[in-house]
Image (cartoon, rainbow, N blue to C red):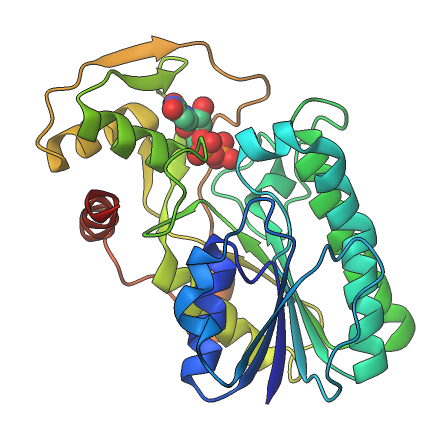
Amino acid sequence: MKILVAGGAGFIGSYLCEHYCGAGAEVICLDNLITGSRENIAILLEQKNFLFREADVSQPLPKLPSGINLIFNLASPASPVDYYRYPLETLRVGSSGTENLLELAREEGAAFVMASTSEVYGDPKVHPQKEDYWGNVNPNGPRSVYDESKRYAEAITAAYRRKYGLKTAISRIFNTYGPRLRPADGRVVSNFISQARAGAPVTVYGDGSQTRSLCYVSDLVAGLAQLAGKANAVDNLVVNLGNPREITILELAGMVISLCSSRSEIIFQPLPEDDPTRRCPDISQAKNVLGWEPLVSLEKGLKKTIEWFEKL
Ligand code: UDP
C-alpha cells in the first residue's frame, strides 16, 4: 500500500502519516511547512517507509514514486489566525492544490480523501449539523478564504468523481485538538492552555456563549483511516468527523484553568467577525457507515494535551 498525505507535516497530517507508517504502508508526505513543521514528523524521517518532500501542492507537483493507492488532501492552513495571515495561499491550496492532487489520483488510479471542514456549514442555522445541510457562509468575509476554498475543494472532488469515476470520500472535520497543536496557532485550545499555564488572563472572545465540539486527534485519525477504507466500496461518501459533545467557550475556559491548576482570570475580548455561534456534528452517518465514534473524553484529551504543553 502506497499512500500520499498532502499536508502530512501538519497537526492532523503527521498523526495520519504515523498511523499508516505504523501499519507498514509506504507513506509519501508533501508539505510546504508554512504551518506544518519538521518536528511533527521527526520520528518518521528516520523510517525507511516514510518519504518527505517539501512542496507546495498548489504548484506543479514534484516527481513522485508511482503506484500510489490512496491520497489524502490535508494541505491547508486551518487555524483562523493562520488563514487570515495566508489568505491567498489558503485559497490556492484549496483550489489549485486540490486539483493537482486529484489529477495525480486520476493518473495513479488512487482513491482520494478530501479533508474538508465543519466551516463549510459557516454560521449554521441548523443544529446539530448533518451532512445534508448546505451551510450559511459569508462568501467574502474574513473566514471566506478558508470556507470557500474548502467548499470549492468539495465541489471539484465531486466533479472528478462524476466525470472520471474517481473513488473519493469527503470528511468534514470539526474542531480537533491534542499534542502537537502549535502553542501560538491562535486556536482556542492552544491559547487557553498557554495562557492558563503562564498564569496570564484567559481570553474569551465575545461573551463565551458560542459553542464548539472538540475531538481528540487520535479519534479523528481513526475516523479518517476508516473513511479511506470505505472510499473504494461506497460511492460519494461525505461524512462529518468530530466529537458530538458540545460546550460553550466560557465552560471550556473554566475547564482548562481548572485542569492546569491555574489562577488565571478570564477576560473578555471582541468576537472575531463571522465567528460561528454554534457548532456540533451529527455523527450518525459516521456511526452507521464507518462504525466510528470518538472514544476520548474531553477531560482526558485536555489532560494529555496539557501534559504535552508542559514538556515543550
Ligand atoms: N476563541 C476564544 N479565545 C481565544 C481563541 C478562540 O474565545 O483565545 C474562540 C473563538 O472566537 C471561537 C472558538 O473559540 O468562537 C474557537 O476558535 P478557534 O480559533 O479554535 O477555531 P474555529 O472553531 O473558530 O475555527
